[in-house]
Length: 251
Ligand code: PEP
Image (cartoon, rainbow, N blue to C red; front, top):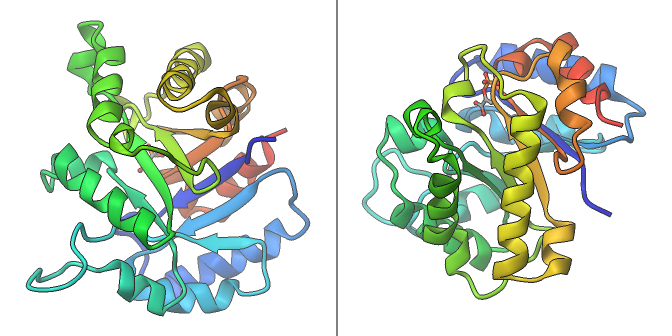
């Protein structure tokens, strides 16, 4: 059976107190949730406190990024070893904000993936087309290229350690969500590509989550699609009640 996952990506929001109190509220309101796995992704300075707070709960803590190199002169970067030393071993790679604002290209992302695999990390790999590509019917070729240039360079993958987050760039933080059939169509396309590249078993076991302006009102219809295994939630994860409603939309 495929893992169902809902992850909250807080991006550069919440100071220490806000982060801790949001975690408290999520813990309090998510006790007994068994329909999916829950992840929260606070900013780097609060990862350790978050991890400690989430011990003995059903919440896992996810880093928003990691360096493509092991160590050295990379001011501002955070390495796999640093994350490991605070017991964090799940990381988001290739978020569209990293790709566009910080110009992280597929070569860099592949290095990050390889390092994460070497360190036995769990990877949330984000892929998604921009509006121009969608409007010119190039969304499938963009996604195929992003896969070919990154994860498809590996000879094998462990589908229990990889989560693909399909996040159309035009839907992130814009209030415009892909409709359920657009999400299903792309998730199915991605799953097929994994089948051709790796195997049917890997493809069947791969968790593919959707991200892009998911709200409590829209979550259920998207999550009900057969190839959608959960969500990566930005804005709506900053309010615990909205986040929990989204989490409860998974059946
Ligand atoms: C995200 O940042 O991954 C995201 C999906 O953001 P939002 O839900 O705000 O669109």
